[in-house]
Figure 1 (cartoon, rainbow, N blue to C red):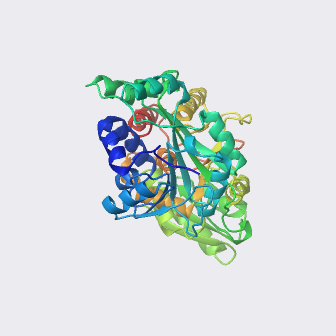
Figure 2: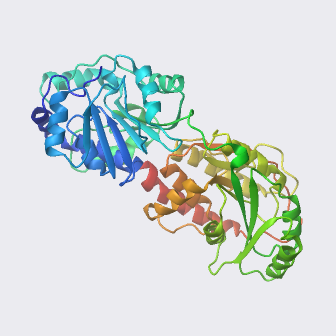
Figure 3: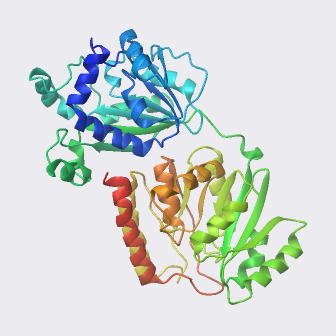
Length: 467
């Protein structure tokens, strides 16, 4: 059994929420970052419906074992649905975009059983969002209760982040994000903002955050069989005339159908004429589309290609063939099997061909790999590898929420990385062998674009980490 508030009625619980409004403001602020407005949300241990109201879901359902709290929620927050239900015996038949378990795990008799029950309301896209009090705060919280600064609560369980992650694994969930937030739960002008937004998100200091957040996905729920999936391979091409025919001949067929989409962008070496020649030559043997971009930059080219793509899985392949087209089935298997949802190539595992990457570029990539692994909370060894793969469904969600970051990335790499992190997608890297160019020269200006990437990293800090 679970009850979200120990022997407290709705009015009493609301009083404590008002008394600790700064704490609840911090809690809801981070949950709003994870849960986009307009999602479908199930909250387990919903209490008075406060969190559901703050998250503004298109479909909101709260369950709780407390009849009095459910009655209060129905009376004062009736825009959503509330049911008296035990989380260890969920009898729902619908799935949700998000399942919220906020500060409730401490009341479960059997946490693992609850997680297993949650599988009933999961689709492959569902994210489980858990917030829980850091056990290091236990002495201070007991003191706060005694002196009347905190709502009285009786807990059965005190779990740390590794305990919860282990229980999720036992119930066939995969943790995709971990975070600790709030090192000052009371409002102190300027100081609270500085410590919670910046200092509390730094290594070491972060260990003492009051609230632990975990985001997980079900590993039981799978996409349709690999043999039924279709694939779109988008190939941005600028001054790559000498590679076009080889790209068609060397790109393997994957899944039910594979289409190749060339996006030509302002070339000066007759790349567009070569694309049209190759199209006419192979159009009866291979599914090929070709289009020219009006804008500039690889990011614009990728968006143009994705706009006409029909595949279930979207892939990017650089036209310079420094990543071999024959490596694409590795990416297909990683996403079709459900092992990952955002698949990124990494050039920094196997030895590279001579001249494939200059020393300065190599150091730059290694620097960004360290920064981004910390920034995103997931391993990302090679941020700038051009081969990236995700489902069309997830890309459409990313595009719909692009306004959160804005149109700031001419390359397209960071747009996809940041957007996928915002969607809480599971990152997986596929090692590839990076080869030297056989035709043309790189379109990247190392210093100019490197500085732009550094600026975008600091931009993302305030959008993803320092919040």
